[in-house]
Image (cartoon, rainbow, N blue to C red):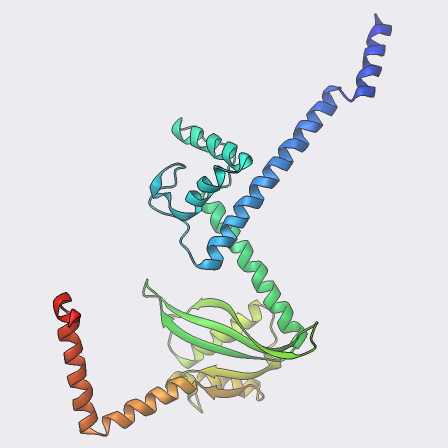
Length: 282
């Protein structure tokens, strides 16, 4: 009996039909399946993010027309992709039976995590380019978003040499949004320095700073640019040319009563015609 069992084990080992081998084979198959699913999920996130399209809708259920772009595109591609089709069918069956799957990687949290991973990767590339260039300039401007939260737009500018052509190109890269509910020059200067420190960007390598013409930014004594210049004298301040031009145009127009009257009449005419579809057709 022992001899028979030994011979059977020897045959199984030779034919790779032991339980351990079968289990390992199933694990490898499952790992590859999930790897293929995650690749598709990441591709969809990159596709939507690159085009600035909305991910989610009113529903997070598979098969619901209101689930918007992310799940909707996955369902469309699932008609022609067997791996994605089988995965979506399992998710749909789980949602209909109200049984929670161990993991399906289609939830809102997973989407946000992938988006954040992509953002971190892009930021790393920008910081790596900046480090190669060493010197940089920064542009910071604040504006309220749709949620009425004041946000600073933080941009880096630097000169990068192309490896293929050897030519030098000016790069302007968006770094991040920074919440800024405080308006004093000291607070803004602290936000700028802390943002650079967070990304391990040495302010001593800054050769230019550009802001709008607000007194809290451009003030030569207590403005944000002056506070930074006190510690880093080579960070030359350049006011926003477009803002300066707009201020000059507004001030020049206010000096001429005829111009004020002209634009006032034009504004009233626009209001009259734009308030009615019938008048707008004229």
